[in-house]
Image (cartoon, rainbow, N blue to C red; front, side, top):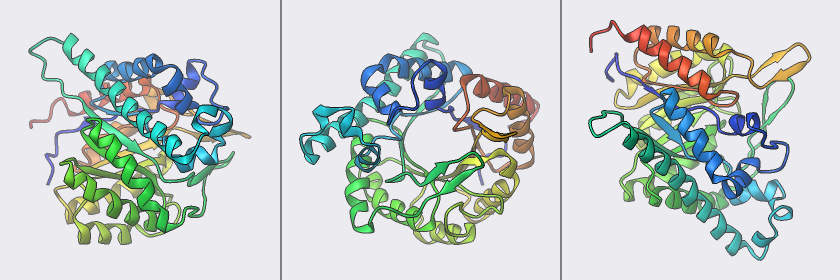
Length: 333
């Protein structure tokens, strides 16, 4: 079982921060264009999460794959990627490398400034999205979409992306925002051989709903059975979950802790909510978010990783860091 009194803090959203800094998120693939055109802005966001107390940085690689980009009419915005599929794919793989290098560079500079005696350790994690948009953000909720990509194409998607991200030097591969059991299974089976070959851990993050089951298709019990059978995942997180649905998610993660005590477990909710007639992307203040999360951390001691995703900011992560340190400061390790 994991050390009950240790924890690590993830960073928060990158796209939310781009929007707060004036980047037009209405354009297709806004984060892709930011990575191409303003890499220094990506570095600034990474650094602010480090200053807030984050110990895990996700690379800005979530949107970097050919199927996502094709679905967003990326060709109309970047004509030089339009020559043929091979050249487009190569450009995407180069952006994978850049996303990792920017996070690594920012981390190295930050740790160096702390001095030679610092014990601060930062993990750089490559974020790999589902091979298509698996949900729609509506005024009411996140709505799952059907599996759009034929299974026979999944190896062509996962393998080059995973290899490029890992060879760039990241510490782990995170497949996140997975909403269906089928896609979780395929992602694990296609990515694990590459992670094993390159000696990197494979982390999986799924999205669950009010009942605790996967938001798109499949029960959490079925997911746990797959993880027990394959023994190929090193960490399991639940991300992009409504903060009102934390308890069933955390109860399920505690079940995983009993069955697979070697796994690192974590929770990364989104901070959006319906406010009147509008969908508010950041509906929880840093103080409220940190209070909810720190209280949960004291009741679910096997959950080691805490953070946030959509709608979160460095201020939310700083408040979480402070609340977690305070809540656990009197606990003997």
